Length: 115
Image (cartoon, rainbow, N blue to C red; front, side, top):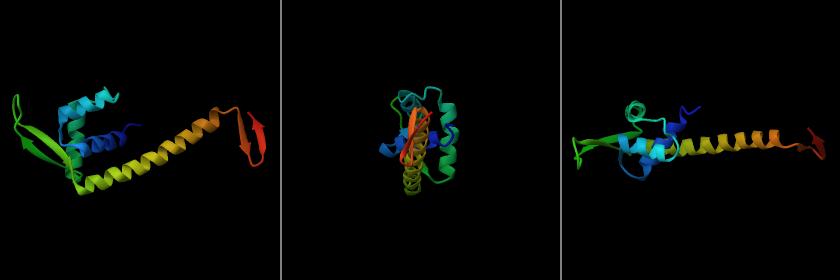
């Protein structure tokens, strides 16, 4: 279920500022996605780079080797916008199902039907 959703979340994080892989893993963890490590994220970033959604730049690190920082391309910004629209629709549809199915009474036309 998370496939595709994590891509959108990564794009949203990258949109705000240039970030490197470990930082993305930390940010996802802070949002409750603890199971996503750098090893999971880097293949996604490589695919996004091939799809021209993100670009990367090597920058000097304060500790250790250079880090690869990712930023959104114009195509990435458009993909994020598309994701946000798809997410809003999906969220709305799922909420409607959950609300409808958990309600003990629902309206069908003008009549109220008990479940």
